[in-house]
Image 1: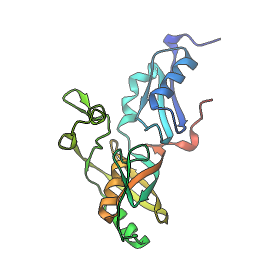
Image 2: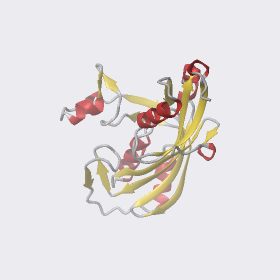
Image 3: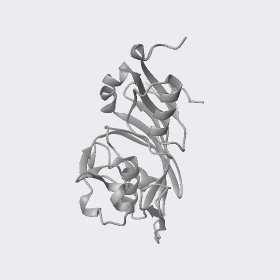
Length: 217
C-alpha cells in the first residue's frame, strides 16, 4: 500500500546519469512517489553525473541544509582548446599554442587554486542579473561579459589524478557554488593553452557519498 502523501518524508541519494537535467530527475521521482513535493540540493549540469540529493514530501522543508555543504568532484579537462560554455556542450575553439604543458606545470597550476580564489560565473549559467538568467541572455546573442558575477570560492583540496595531453583528470573539494567548468577554464588560462570540461562526476556532498547512492531505473 502506498504511503499517504502527507506522511511522505524521505531523503534520496541518487546517482544521476549523463543526459537528463537535475529537474528531469525530480520529475522522475515525482512520478514514482506520486507527489509534487520533491526538490533537489545542488544542480548538476546535464552532461555531469554523480550524487544528487533529492527530498520527498515533508523532507523538502529541510533541503536547504544540504545546499551549502562542501562538495567533491572528479573532473576531466581537455587542454588546447576553449568552449564558450566552458564544457563539451559549447562551441569549441582550438587554441594555437606551442605550450604542451608538462605534468609538473599542470600540477603547479592546479595547486595554485588551493585555498580558493575569486571566480567568475560562466556566461552560460543560471545566475540571474536583473531578473534574467545569464544563459538566456547569452543565447540571444547579448554581451553578458560585464554582467558575470564574481564570487570567492574555497578550494580545500585539489589533486591531479591522471595526465596525458590533452586530457587531465583531477579531484577537487570545494565550497558550495563553485563552478568546476570555470575552474577548468581558469586552469587553461593559467597554463596559456586553454581548457574546457569534458567529464564531471560529483562524488560527495558533505558526509554523503555517491557510493551510497542508487540509480533510478
